Image (cartoon, rainbow, N blue to C red; front, side, top):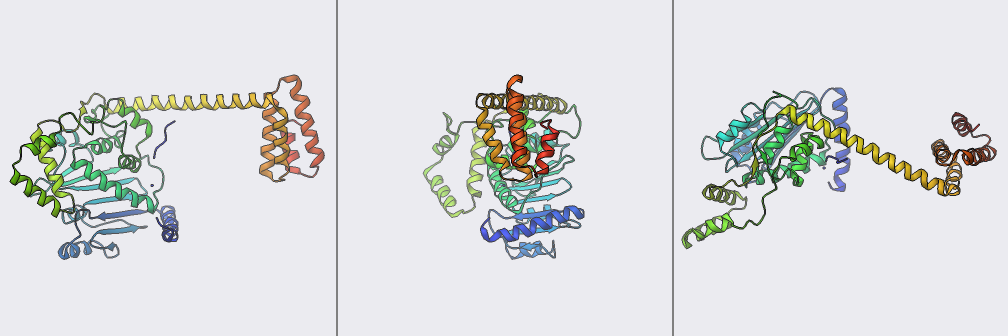
Length: 401
């Protein structure tokens, strides 16, 4: 069955302390982790002064804002903090809240109208900047069925993944939208259709896999969703829109573009030009399949797939046991040697393993020889370990005495 999907030696003591505090917070009631980070450039003095007003106890710098709560929660203006300088944000708590915000300088890979059409009634919002084409993508989820506990190093890893997801969005990859919607599939109108299904759900990037894990999306639901996902676009299309766009620029324009790119250390200029290229190419930069399944249909398909996976797991276990018993029947002496080797350790756990092997050997052999071989082995165990009460009790419970 597919599985789902997170520092340095000097950090281990700190991480252990935080882990203990996190668990204590959950036992006492709640735990909340809040983090903001800059990607493009550090905060200036005015921005930093605003961030300092949002919390009296957070770790705040020109590149990061981190706080943990064991009672209560973050009360700062998270959206305004994004518009005033931070580029990525997460909020995770033990009650199932999963908040993500990404500041996109070049806007969405979809038009605002198209985005609104598919996400107007969801927890996924686009907050446009009052000036320019940028804005903040906001994902606010409250998961009823959530599990697991994130460790500090996983938060570090996930923030790095958010930076990568931000780049992928600004380069036209809309899979973040669909995964965020998929995390809410069990909520809302059962008859509501899914959004357009983006290409490449079969081959998620490491950053998208971390997003799916952060949002607690079941592997089975991801697999069902990927069935309607087109193939991911080739990295080297036959007609490259970038080559076409460059060919249409004058030498003077190209010199100016090169100067801007060399002076930009944040990647903002590159993303701006890529957005222009997508717009002038007049083609969808990322293939999608049109919506065809409702929430109810996706969930039913997920349940069917999970039943299939459980049956496959049972079949594999049964086949593995059959092969094991067959090997034991072919060489009983080897199994008996293992039994006495375990018993020689004289621990309760090893006694349990030894008797379990003896039971399997009895099952593996034909009825005529099973009683003779296993009873003789049990008698020898009793002779060698007459005072091992736990061993004698186990043999008696399995009818060897």
